[in-house]
Image 1 (cartoon, rainbow, N blue to C red):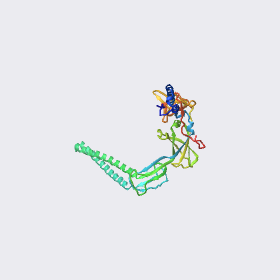
Image 2: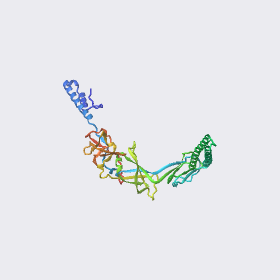
Image 3: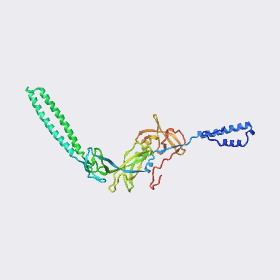
Image 4: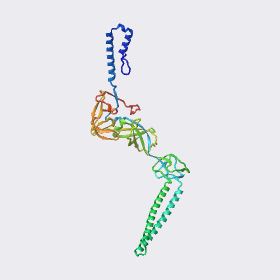
Amino acid sequence: MTARCPGGRMSSITRAMMVETSRRPLMKLGRGWIQWLLIVGITMVSAGCDRSVDDPPIRAVRAIQVGDVEQLSRAVFPGRALPNEEVNLSFRVGGELIARPVSFGDSVTRGQLLARIDPRDFEIQVRTYQGELAATKANHEQQNIELEGLRELRERGAATQLEVDRVRTRVDELAGRVQMVEAALDDAKNRLADTELKAPFDGVVAATYVEAFQTIQPREPVMRILDTSRIKVQVDIPEQLMYAVPYVTEIRCTFDAYPDVVIPAEVREIGTEASPVTRTYPVTVIMDPPDRVQILPGMAATVRVRAELPADEEQRGIEVPLSAVVQDGESAWVWRVDPEHNTVHRQEVEIRALTSRGVRVHGIAQGKWIATAGINTLREGQTVRLDEAPALSIDGSGSER
């Protein structure tokens, strides 16, 4: 029988013993000598196996430096230009398209006519309801006059109450009919107005989908309009940097087409859900393009930011990723990483506020390192190694930091 370590590994001592005993007949060795060798060999094999089992591998942890907003300031985020607004336009009614005075690439102004459907059927409907409404109102007025006359006759005993009630019922019916025809006329006028498609804002025609004299259906796309009065750029921020977004004080954007033109921007929207693949959050910035340049949707852009931590931020509570905080009942803590000894230590903190990007805590000093992933399995004093994150920034020369 051969002693083996877990996993089927054989120690070097065991192999040496097997080689040695194979060279000499066992009959020449004393029984006590053989037993002693077996005991010593098995003991040493077991000791070697125990050491390999008891020594756990050093855990790699992802960590951030608390309050290190400079990391965000050093980062460069690529993106692409987006229009301020984008809409596919369609008619609410169907019919034959008799005019489309604009084409792809044309600039349009708010309220400008873009396309028209043949309005003749809708005009007829409007005139029909106008005539019906006039006749119904006249009949209603005539019945009102008759009702007043019957009331006077009833007071003198020359008419019965049944006659009065019959005319009153007719008056009420006609009043309801007037309201119905008025509503139908309003709808007909709206449908007539809907035969004209007008620009909802100043912009550019990005695409046309139908041609003149083509019969189209209601809600069928006719053209797409872009509002380029302001330009948006969407960038992806890594989750380990989202805590620093509230401290952004300046945003600068450049475009590959105009590398020397720096355009100030502001945050328009911050996404609250990370991509399951890239673990990044979408952040949209918006800007007013200078008059001397034409920024078009799809142009490649580069966004840089400047972030600064307020002097009293440590007292107010520093924002950290939600994944860095462990909470058990009313107690909360983070795992502080000692980079000199590569160990982690529990650091009690006070939760000041939850934000859409993380949690604001008090009790951890600025500049300290804290673990941000796998924190629920860490132990006090555990030896770890910092797991380096992918390069997030590019310096001015274009080399990765």
